[in-house]
Structure formats: C-alpha cells, structure tokens
Image (cartoon, rainbow, N blue to C red; front, side, top):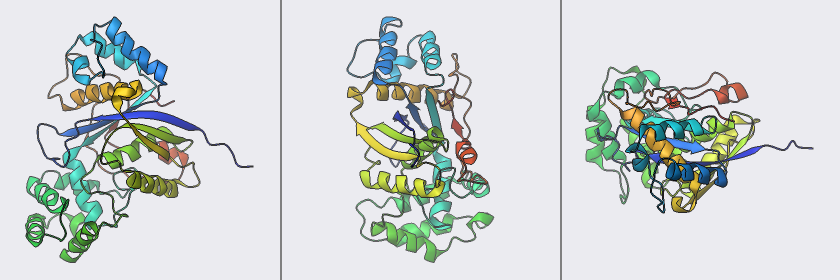
Amino acid sequence: MDAVVETVEIACDESGFSGRNLLDPRSPVIVHASVDLAEPEAQDVLGTLRSRFGHRRAAEHKASALLRGEGDAVAWFLAALEGRSHVHVVDKRAFVATRVLELFVGEPSYRDGTRLGDDHAGAVAALRQRADVLAAFVAMTHLKHRRAVDPEAVERFLAAVPDDVPGLRALTRARVEGVLRRLVDGDPSIPPPLEPLVPAVAETALAWSAGRRSVAVVHDEQSALTPQRMARLAAELARAVSPAPPPLVDVRQVDSRQDARVQVADLLAGAARRDAEAPVAPAVPVKPVVPVKPVVPVKPAAPATPAALAAPRRGAAEAGSLS
C-alpha cells in the first residue's frame, strides 16, 4: 500500500515585480514570500494590526501601510510569523546574468534558477557587473509580439559578450539563434527568459517541501504563472526529486482582496524587500529575515535526497523555520 504523502498549503505574494524591466536600479530585488497560515489565523494577524496598531480597515492590507507605521508593528508582525513563513529574495541583475548561461550554454529547463539547476556561480558573478551585456540580453529576449529573431539585437548581444569569462566559451551565434527561434516558435519546454517569479515559485515549493512533503500554492494573481507553465514546472520538479514526494502539486491564483493569507504574504514580502534594499541597516531591523545576498544557482551534491532538497538556496532568506 502506497504511503500517504503530506501536503502543506501555502499562500504567496511578491514585492518588487517590475515586469521585464529587470535592470531598474530603483528596484534591484524581487521578494517572494509565503506563509502556511490558515485563513482564520491570517484574519487574526490583520485584525491585530488594526486593533493594536491602528491600521485602517480596508479591502486589502498593503505593505506600505505596515512600513510607514510604528516600528513596533513590524517587529510584532514578523514575530507572529516566526516558524510559519519563508522569504525568497532574488537579485534581478544576478537573475538576468544566470539566464544568459541557462539559455545559451546549457539546455534550458524548468529546473533553471533553482537549487536543482546547474551551478554557473563564477560566470554569473562576472556577468552581473556587465550592464551592457545584461541590457543587450533583455532587449534580445523580449520577444513578445515578435514573429522572427531580430538579427540586430543578436549582433548587439554577441558584440557585448566578454571573451574572458570561461563559462561563456560554449556560447555561440548558432546556439543563441537556435534558442531564440525556439522561443519565437513558442517551444513550451523552455521557461520564459525574463520571468523571475517562475523559478521563485519553484524554489519556494522546494523549501517548504524539504524532500518530505508536497506543496499546494495559493498565489496572488500573476500573468507569468500560467496553468501551462505551472504544470510543466510541477512535472519537472517531480522528475528531478523522485523518489521523494513531488514538491509542487497545485498552483491556484486568487484575488488577494478575498484571501487574508495572501495579504499577510504581501506584507511579509514588503517588509523583507525594504530590508533587502536598505542602503544601511533599517531603524527597525526586519527580523528574523537574514541579510540578503545576490541569488546565484547552487547545485546540491545529491539533489534527489531529502537532505539536499532541504538545503536553502544561496541568496534565499528565511523568516523563521518551516514547519
């Protein structure tokens, strides 16, 4: 008789999403936050923010109200979520640099951008400093409404690619043009090149799963998280970790105004993003979120084992422990 696999339902939201404008220095990170609260528990959190800290009753709680209020409210809020929440922080420049390697050096996969993908750390660190390469890549891979590869965009990108980064030696014109043609043709096996939320959902599911249970996601509405992409993501993660339980079994999008859990995740994402982008330590430290480092791929030594799956990805910050 097959063992019953535990499933945990989490509610997620993000802060710092800027569409394909991934290189805006005013918004250097995107934060994906998640909580495993039940709806009544989330309602209690929001109710306390109103009754104890004077938050106005509104159709939707927003992070801006929490962060411009008293520091005690932030400290209380974070303490209330300890052990019931997780925060994944993505440095957007590092994400773009990583996508260059994932698309044009290896074979693109829905494992990309997660702990299950290839480790391009050295090349990513070098590319992250090259604004010209990153800008040319974004322009070249922004393919919405295009029916053909733009040869001028390819030329600009290839001209900008440095020749002193060993990890880029496998990058060729033929490889770049071939992948771009597949993207133009709508090859569903290639994840969208400029959508950091897709690997963020994957990494969040892997963190909550920890190699021992499955995860069902309730998420604020996001056009990047299409049913087709989420189905492919779930299938790829399941193949990668087998025989461990499939990390991601469902993604359901909701109107955040109708789900208190998603509103709590939004507040947490906003608080963590403020901490991540602060040029100096904030007056009220956003704890227990730890200091943020740029996200670069880390491939565990044994990705299919529970211990390896539970290892946090470099650059991910946790708010408390997962339960």
